Image 1 (cartoon, one colour):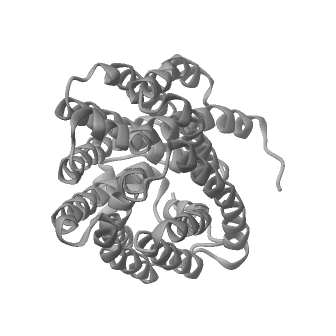
Image 2 (cartoon, rainbow, N blue to C red):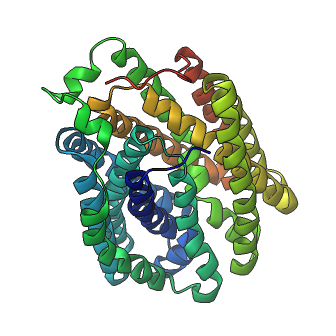
Length: 383
């Protein structure tokens, strides 16, 4: 492993903290969704509508990400952390599901902003640990969950306390050196509409759209299915997620190792197809099958994370990289809404598990679309 210089160490520290907080805050709603449903008497269709509203946050992250390409990464990351932590502090006060949806819509906007801009930053600084730190952030509420369930509001208060980190990130996080060297002129959208960036952007957007048809319902309804359909206790769910996290760590390390040696393209597609297959199968395989599939799909999905992260960043020029990352999130919003509404429509007839399994074909198609992109391993980052 190459030795990190002082700027990279500071980047890893402060951007890593931002990513941990984003993972923490972004995972609370999914983890506590069964308790939220009980609090407000929500049905599957109500929760699908909740998820459909929340994912619109990607639309807000998109114009903010264009500011990161024009004015730098550091300030947007710090502002994003402060904003989503402030919203988390307000979330326990919501009186109904509609108010919860609107607040989490705002939070997801800034969580998406931090995720997209941090991805651009880590690619530019040749770092690879931030996706793993995002998973570490998700692990915090998992460990606390059995002790506070069903008091879901407490986890949002805890997540909001991260607001004290925002000014520290503003002050301590170095600006991207690649961004400082790039010549930022004109509209970043205009840059991305030029060849070859336009074709790459459309392919990645199409993949994100189709992939979210499976990814959003599977992620949102994971704990609901485990608790309400399989009748697993909060403690068992936390142990299952913890076991999956171990495999995710191993998978992440393996994915980064293989990607650096054999390239991004074939590896990313293969891991994506396998992940989709295990995801869909888990929702129709009974309790033991669900637990086993969860562990496996977590491992393969995590192995795909450093591959996709490096590949997507290397596809675009530095002067428009953050905007491109956010554009994929906007496309994913459309797919997420389609997937959530499909599951809401199908679940009364097929059941929640079979409905999610049926849309797993979208996950396979999403990965295959990426075969249209070029290999980028070993090539210099475009300016």
